[in-house]
Image 1 (cartoon, rainbow, N blue to C red):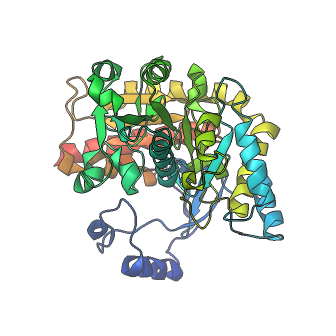
Image 2: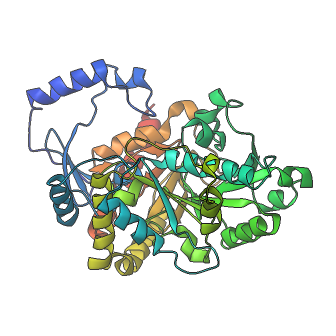
Image 3: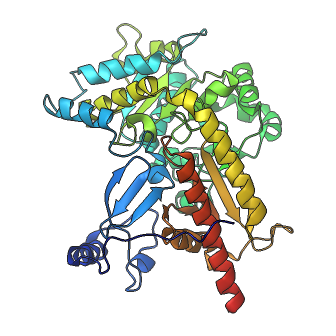
Length: 455
């Protein structure tokens, strides 16, 4: 077993300005998905991120961490990538933003064409791209397009949706309607779209005909559900779902906000099963993790319904001030260039194999690691009180959060989903850095075990 890892600090005493920043943060900054009473407690000292390079982050005290969740699943090629930095500097010398309402710009045009080129074949390729700003709005766009598409077709009854248990598709009201995680969505249930939830394809096949006839679309995160705790779907499930949607004339919406841009070993998760949906929602890694940017890709079939000559009532009246933002699009174009110039996808296979091996060893040698769920460079490491009996920890113990806090002392920065530790690093991570990240989880879990034994 490796020696217990240590986190080095350049500063014996924290700089005064860090303490000032923390005080200001607690006084004014309301953080997302964060219990603020705990955050603002006197004993809690937040990490103030000051810089980053590659797969590493550095805080205001000089401590270094592996970015274990790619800065909430966004960063692709690493922080401070010179190719993307240069593209942003060049674009800043021209213009940072201009409206896409009644005007256009070169980076947005070229990015739309680049994204369309990933899906050139088939009877209905994804050749129409609508830009927004994040994953929620990319899904919101797909939902509204689906409803309006059926209205234009004279089938206004098709306005309901189907999603899967434990789904998460965003937090705007329409996207949240598709969600199946009570913690995030229960307070707002009944306020949005009429959505049916099923557990799997068997349940989908048993839907009553009256329910199927009212469906505008089915939404799913392909290959793996993210916020559900990194839970993979069975192999072949996506292709079966595509077939079901085709047979029943229901639009298929794939949410690749999490799985897109190399995370699963291919550029997009749907490519593993050669599935082309009716809508593909992209965000997070689209800009390489640099700037808020999202895209909803759709087919010529959908687009033609809206663009019918002379029918202005069919216009899609939806959008955001920063749609097609030139700076974000320039970052995205540079990120796609990096994929080609660094041959990123081809280099992932040995990295994914090493990642899988290290996680298997972690589960074998670490108490309370009950299950490791993985797809490509995405992993969820579930902690359990008794892995043999699959007995969970009591929720009030917040074991996952405590383990992630302990991992910081060993140089890993990540967040849990309940008691599942997320490990989803930038694609540029090295094998040695993977080893360090896994060791941090191992020792953090051991420390929790030791403390539990002393109490």
